[in-house]
Image 1 (cartoon, one colour):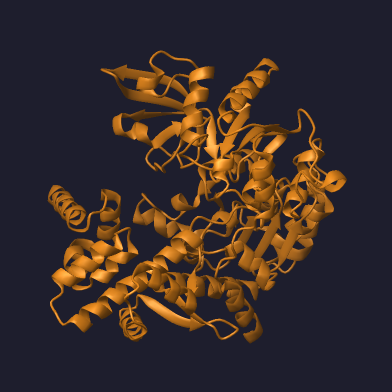
Image 2 (cartoon, helix red, strand yellow; image 1 turned 90 degrees about the horizontal axis):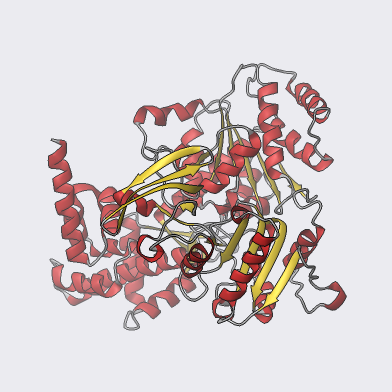
Amino acid sequence: MENKIKTKEIDIREKLTELFIINEEEAEAMIRDYGSNVIRIFLQKPYLLCHYKVKFDVVKKIISSKSNNKVESHMDVKIVAAAIIYASESHTRFGGHTFSYKCELLDGIKKIDKKIVEENIEKALEILIVDREIVRDRDSQGRECIYLSRLYNAEVSLANVIGCLAKMSKCSINEKDENEYDKVEEFLRSYNNSSFELNQNQIEAVRTALNNRVAVIYGKGGTGKTSVIKAITEGFKYISQVRDPKICLCSYTGKAVDVLSKKTGMQATTIHRLLGVGITRKDWGERNETEVLIIDECGLVGVELINLLIYSIKSSPNIRIVLVGDQFQIQSIEPGCVLKQLLKSRTIPMVELSEVVRQRNHRLIVDNADKILKGITTDGKKLGIWFKKDEFEFIEASSEGIKSEVINKIDMLLSAGTSIYDIQVISPYRKYTNGVDELNMEIARRFNSTPERQIYKFGILDSVIAIKNNFRTGVSNGQRGIIKRVETDMNKIELITVDFCGREVTFKNNGIQDIELFYVATIHKLQGSEMKTVIMIMDKKHERMINRELIYVGITRATEKIVIIGNKDTFNEGVKKVSQQRNSSLAERLIAINIAS
């Protein structure tokens, strides 16, 4: 029976890829969303294809050729409906917005098809509302907002849950415990008398988290957010009458999870794993027993994913939620700007960590990071960014000279006794000149020379990173490891064994595609991580991608030394450039809930 189902799914997938000119990944997403009737549904309503990466011209052609109603005006409205979905998806996918203002949507539609008339846009909007594909709403200033339904539902649901919890402050894990506040103070006194001492800012953050049903702890890189999380977990154990309160620590990336687990002494997990992707229904239900949910690096999480996570545990009667993040980091890849909207609302108990503790002995990194956030460049004379050898360096190089300067710098660092595993090169781009792929191969070839490197790509002792979640092996996307064993046959790698922080995992055949070299990473990939020495590429050819947030994140990943290699003008222009503000009404919804209460 199971084989028949799999065979049917393969047949459907093949038909989808052929009919709609898409890859297998998109076809699988369609099957997952619409089931075995997916082809029939899409032929009846071809505009639904625009939720996926199907070219608009392909959808338009399908509407014209497959429509049961050949009346031109009827087909025109369906084409406009497709354009509305296509423009909306593009706006959220590339801009990170949760909605489009109507004027933005109209501009997007015109770019897709200049022949579309406004009369048909209104008709198409009504069709999509009936089909529950979009929602029309207005912001606090009365401007019309067009949401894709899934983003509207996520934003409203998240606001309702967070808003409800915000009203239930100072509610203990065990509501019968009337002395919880005293127990919190007792814990804080005992914790600060132990071997690890928190500063007053951190103490207030822990107090706020322990005394409220939901709290936000935020601060720049290096302000001790992970140390606060550790104290919060210990605090919840202390004040709880339950011997072992169920505390879940989670983060967006595998690398951030590794850092969180190592520093807190508790096993953290990725959000995707906690949500139950790849595990049984039985395990799914167990999350309702969660008493404390701590979400680290929450600024990296889109509105849909964070809503799914919080919604999945909202029925736990005594749930506490602590959201932790850096408001200055690069925004989430997925739509939304949850952390910034929570801070904007000012409706939730929150504490900002302001004292940098990570680079305490390397103040130049801290001082320059602050200047970058203020838009101060290298040409500000005494007030500008300062450089110092072996702490904050800038090596000027042309696009053509960057690669050799990177190699020279790594060579110098290794000669001075720095481990290759304590050096992380970061670049804004994966592809192109001086991108991740090109530099990874060059560094691997130069500093871990193995026979036939070009054929096999990987070698023993290579630094690698997992790029997919694998719940069977327990490896998460973003986890870093070192190759311990490579087996080859007939110009092909058959097996690679990787050591992930003392745990060896074997990748075979196609599974080898789930890892890649990690001497170089994108700056996005390194969010939530820290390294002793960071080399950041600043190529003039990458200037479209470079902005203030990207530079700030790159610099604050270094705990001891940052070396920037490239074009100083590109760096300065990037510092001046701030990323576009995203459309979101989460803050407005939270304020409205707060006023209503």
